[in-house]
Length: 112
Image (cartoon, rainbow, N blue to C red; front, side, top):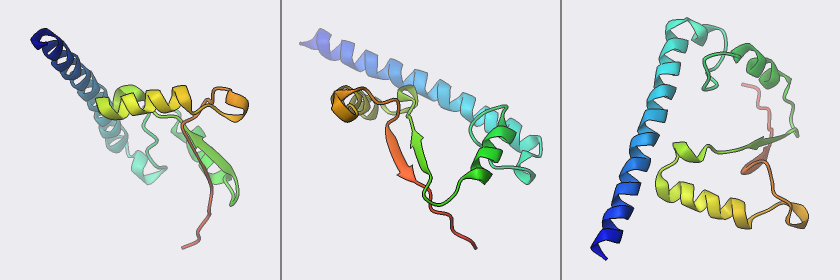
């Protein structure tokens, strides 16, 4: 039993180490974006390039448009990644078909 617990603990520690590396790369990308002056031109979309394309898509969204999101399991804490894996496995789309996204929503445009 002790070996199994050590294995689980070691696996969880490895997952968290890998996740922190991923989040550090994200933070570095945000820092490069901020240092480039991008904040004055368009929002940060989590990437080092392609901001303009994402910004144009964002500007084209209208009330009622459907948007979808897919989570990156490696960026989630282990329990959340495990729950996501179960949801993906059991929560297929229509007719039991696999979905290519984890969450969906509808755009609501608010004018300030």
